[in-house]
Length: 148
Length: 141
Image (tube, rainbow over all chains, first blue to last red; front, side, top):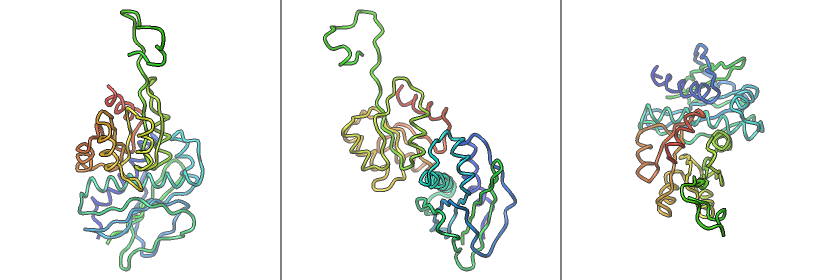
């Protein structure tokens, strides 16, 4: 079971990145639950959580959204490596927020990045994933929280 | 203070003349290319010169030994050697170095640990240009 305050921490970490880095807030769509592995976009920044809770939290975004986000950040390099770097930084922010709010009960891995080659991340058996749509400008990404 | 090379062979500056400030040398340490470029692009101090950047603690110590920076911005979560260890080693080599931690690790325990190792300031990621410049100003004041 995922508590509302836990979900809020992960969402705040994500939206804070847009608000501060791009100076333009993101909005949240209606969260929903899925049993299967959620479909990923082109770039995904992921953190593993162990300790009091066990599972994964990840931010997955389409290339077009990341390109606009980089432009808003005054970045001029739109290479594959920079896109990976960017989703890693979003995951890093989510991780930092979680560490601040949950303390050392949650053991959070350094962020890792997936791009293209992995179509989905299988949740642990019996654990459903919360999908929170992250809407920014005309683009939509997903925050996925899958914790047992 | 007059710059040593600029003043060579000219004797002392005239009494009462405004002395040009020596540039402050800054080293940027972060495993993210985006963040390193952002810090370099956003800092707005005329007398601050970025003399190098590093993607991990090991690389940072090599550049530190070669360039002797006055100010370092330091990420904490990095491969090979993390920021906490790197801060300790830099301060052991040169206690007068000023170090600004720039990290997403926003918990109090991490900030305290960095300060205990010798960091002088802490800025949370993500940050605005204004927050960055205020933090650097605080550091070099």
